[in-house]
Image (cartoon, rainbow, N blue to C red; front, side, top):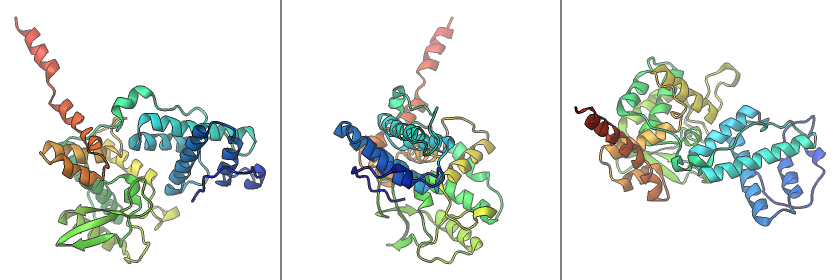
Length: 322
């Protein structure tokens, strides 16, 4: 779904819908409908709806439901500021309500709450795992079948290399590069239009990739997905971010980690936090995570400071003294 966000003459909205099916063409009609609003509002609506359709495309969703909007909200909160997430989700809700008012599609975003501003202090919104927990996660996989090798590799890439779920889904079998005696993966990062970044991988991770692709019988041809579904109904198709989120949650629960604050995105936080705990230079962590600003990477220091904070226990010990 490549969307051109332009505001022009309204075309008949009904022409964009056949049997109340969801269509990208409706977004242009909606933007034109709002053309008389403030320029800043129209611009925000345009950016928001383009982002939403991009997310739908990345996840292979053609007819969004309320659950899809909830998943989209979590995706926004894990990658954007809470204030931006609120604006983007509000635009989707307004768009959804407009569709329903025109009888074009049901109000698929009805009842989905927007993120609260008091969550802004926790922009990255999700906690990280301890080193022991991360090891437990990886050691929970046993077996040499395609699905087990795939799932363990995905979790390793997110924990070890800080890859986002969308970056994992965009990987192809031909994205492995050898340079100067090191191995890299070519990455299509968030907000990018192509695979403009690369991330170094260890020999362990490289061997895991080769083992998985060998068992799967990959052909290493252009455009072939690195990770594919093993389900009967869509076997061989590119894995989507929703599947990876479910995989992460399922794996966390299997090792006794069941918290709303531990999500798929927590793997990326874990990667950064563990490296900083080991004394890795902030600039190196910034480079690995591909942050534009060092201040973004520095947020992960909060987790370290929280883990090392024994203020309450210190006072408790003092109060316990007779």
